[in-house]
Image (tube, rainbow, N blue to C red; front, side, top):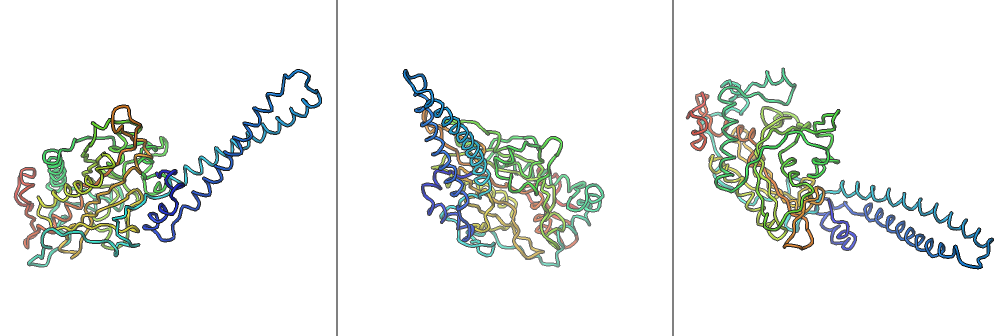
Length: 422
């Protein structure tokens, strides 16, 4: 959520930042609502003052009874008008809240200009894109042939857009999650947490999934609860309505969880296999830090996600998203894209976002810069470290052999306890 005061006091600057997302975007509706509220409040305060002044005339000695009767009627009219204005102010407050909730975060100045993913900027590339010395098969064919992925059984259970892992496939998913968490805890200093996978409406609102993206969420209707779309939601809301001390920061959490998303994406190759599914597992990295350090922390967060791919020897590139391609809550975002040798393309495997104080305002997460100081909003950041299903997809394509087997990367062998999936 935005700082309304900043937008009102710096409308041109705020609009210029918003238009890095969309040149047609503006704060016109928000500013009009605020002006309507301001006018109603000004009239309300003026009338309340006049009411108090006129009320002082009652009880005065020698007051003319007929004049007092007229004064009563005048005050009665004022009272009616005050109540009308109070209702208008209440309605304007709610309209302002909803408008603020519907507006995306403002991009940072360092975010590339552009409208679509074609305008994103490649920051760096690691490794040489793999070229298989034989005709490779896509991950869904490899997994099915090896008996480690069973999409037909998943469809019988849950319908299209789900996956079922079997045997060494299930172990591979579990091994990857354990490897990632161990790496982030032992090398990068994160605290591991295991959260509920069902959250309240206010938690989804706090991180920006609601109200705008409710149609994409899985809702449990009798209780108005939601299956989490990512561990970002419960982990960020662990500190909801809390005030921290500066000495508490920075905080780093890592969580492994299933993720549930109703929207499965586009057609054709986009929905085959593990590329886009309604349920998948992910290791999530969440940071809480101060405004002064959030840009530096963002770069560190990206490097932590990169470390997983480097350890698995999976070539990737880091892409800075342009304003038009940013997610709703992000002020700046780097996508990490892994190379898929069969598809001959880069595929997103992690998004690392800096939200500044956007989520903290919605979830009311603050800190005191020093003891006794006025609380300020923290900055929140998160990123996938990594999406496990897409890592499975990349491994199967990258490490497949001509005989149909898949070599297990060295980093995973202590977890898999086999060298080859056959």
